[in-house]
Length: 346
Image (cartoon, rainbow, N blue to C red; front, side, top):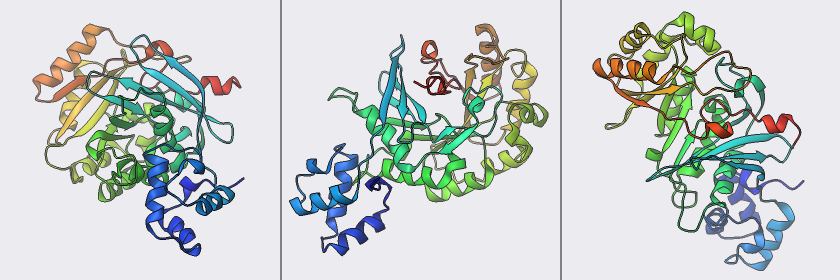
């Protein structure tokens, strides 16, 4: 199989072009065709000479995900089941809102972190995605849009833990952010969600300036360790000390995500403990009423319980949002992605 040209670094592509005595600017032209014009064949690259196009065709391929299924929710959310070149599947979710169009992308096939409330964790980790496979989710979802539509926001909140696939995630983000030869989405419109892998989290904001969302979900080490095994390695005190030290740009905040589980972490005492934990951190809290999925022992709290939890945190001085379920009728809501069709062999 010919290597995928999207897997070449800028330096590798420049070296290949140099060996053919092509000018350096050809690399930028090729990247624009791939990421801004969505080319799926080298013959489309009409500002390249015929000889160069033929050489590219002989030596490289252009990756493209196969859409195995696209399910549309009653609220307009679309869940894509994408097939990778090796036959594995990942899921991405397109979320339309009044002034934005957000794509939730995956960074791994499955996930190895074992969070008890998350459907993806039931798969275990199958493999990491390449940077090209992360970016291709954006390109393929974009091909389904009308001419006047454009994906405006990216959230790395799909299948997998982005910071457990650090190198490929950062390579993908470089393409997504690059306005000159990449997709050109501002870092202010990109959010990376993590369970809190502390060394990678510290490194991340030295190398990029995307928004950070930390999956907290409990306010005590005992409960968080039961729900999220990663807490045994990076307990709350270490994680929150890291968050306090992060160089968050002015006018930005860290988002802390907190899935509300009925009779587990949704009491007034839990809200007060959460408030105390986050004291002094410039942040906002996203409350996520649990989205049920098969084989889960948890239940979603009632609307009154959610409102009580939110109001208590607000009264304690926090900015608090409740994330409305999107696409829950097609198993596309937060925590529901699980590749169930892939397991059925479809």
